[in-house]
Image (cartoon, rainbow, N blue to C red; front, side):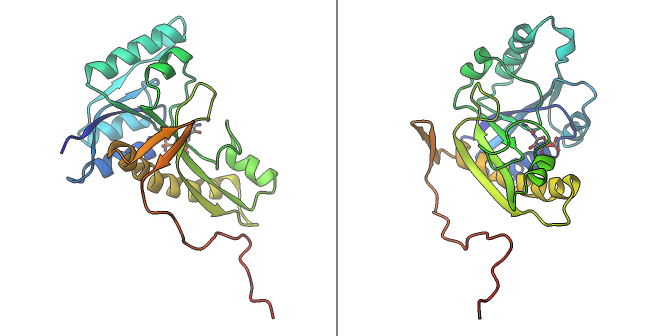
Length: 220
Ligand code: GAR
């Protein structure tokens, strides 16, 4: 099988990265991890990737005068490792148009909300503040504008009246760990094409029950 070579970009603990690494360990998975790169040398995820036997690199953005030279170094590092597809996994550095365009339709991102709702930071606290009853996460192709781009997979969960930002984040994160490997499987396996800025997925349609929050009670 011709496995797509994936570069993972991280900035922190790397739990989504670990879910991608675990998926790629399956012999039938259509992707392999070529390298993990962090813009923060102290990122916990670098240790975790190294312990899993994955090649790691730190490219400290603070060592560069501006974004463009940092991104040139990052781009070259990815090419040096034969990367064909990038997965941003908690990579918290804005990328310029030059980089995003070079990797157009070859760079995925996971975001902790049901995009296009709640782009940006603090999504869980904002979901609670805005009284959302359904929240979730999204895997999408990267575009220049932050947290936009064709959507490959989403998962939705109920927001409970007792939720704090932390409890909600933990339940959303569980779903991120499911949909990110799933989305990578779809994209690396050639099951996704982009048409008019929509990701068209050649996979069974979900006819499962709707998520209704709060749950329906029998009406008598
Ligand atoms: C994840 O929740 C991811 O969705 C989020 O950062 C966290 C990283 O956790 N990303 C963004 O907010 C990007 N806009 P992880 O390092 O344990 O994967």
